[in-house]
Length: 480
Image (cartoon, rainbow, N blue to C red; front, side, top):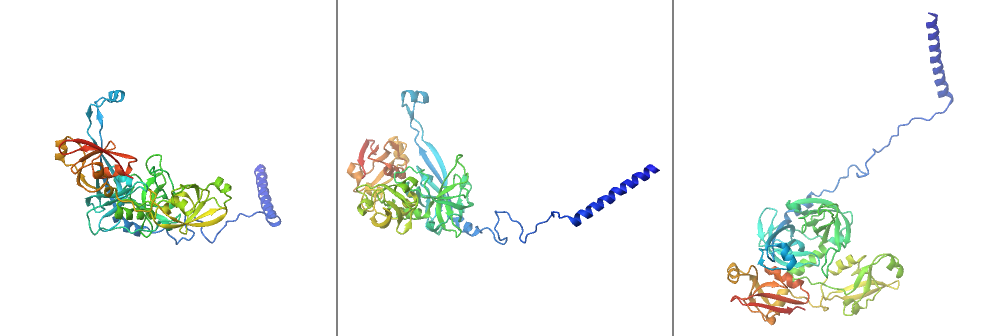
């Protein structure tokens, strides 16, 4: 019993000591407090707008306005089978040529944009390149065979025409007013999935990717992060008002599918190309006549420039427009007709909007001083004349050889001269009725094949074929 009383007394003594210690510390000593921090505004994620009432842009109007104007394009092309003995190893080793293989049919798909109620449609050149047949499928599922009005490989733009009326068409926007960060829509048919709309922002302007190997290539792409995949080529890049600001053309990808970057030809270029193709049958390319490069840190230091921007003039051909106007090597071009140009791509884009014979005001920096010159732009031939359509230069009309001609003459392909007037072909000795089967050894299936091969030819042109009586013939001529 005494032991229990002793334990109880000790326990009570400990409890009393604890209370005394707590009272003494809280009364006579300072101590840090545990504070719950309160704010007047709730904490927000950085990705959300500061004002909770703000919302992301409504893109439904732009999508609804444009989706009916974007079409699906299907192409069919014929690839020549060449000659074979039937044994590939034997052919490669000895170059044997025994029997002709059947041409292979290749199909392709892409997108296009309706520009007028009577059926003019713009797309990429690479969508319809080498195609013998082009079919356009509207958003309402109607199908039309398309006529190729013209192409411009240097900008990767092509113009088609279908026989239709009262079509819903798109309105041109102004790509020169696009700003980095602005919302845009990509409308097209990726992977044959029709009427697909994706959204993103303008990531950069005036991109030169060097993917076009044409001699007069112009690249000043709009870069966006709107998802674009194979099949989107030729489709529309739309601003928030539903107006056309570009033609979707390329993606930057190691896999062949979208990985975050897509590129579109600005509508400022598209509008000019389409206008030329409709009026002249080919693009009236204006040249300023300079060899150029972007200004870099080394050039800026050499010329004592205030900014590392502008277009450095590395060469001035004697017979060019710039030389005649007074522009010299080591000049730095900073603006064209009061539009600032910061790099070569922007200069090419500005000049591409003009035609040969147009006068433009070019400002350069020379010796730390600005100088202005009036440059009369020229064509690829070095003069200011409008370049005529190839068919006009050739002076002929054509149509594909019919099945009876092919069977009687034992040929697989060809186009027949149906009308021959003054021009290069008549001068070379060709006569009406001649069926052209190859140009520079490349098979010709359709009139578009012939136009393309003639347009791409450099130097002499070799035309081979057969007359209706079975007489084989070939002709050589040139086009200046």
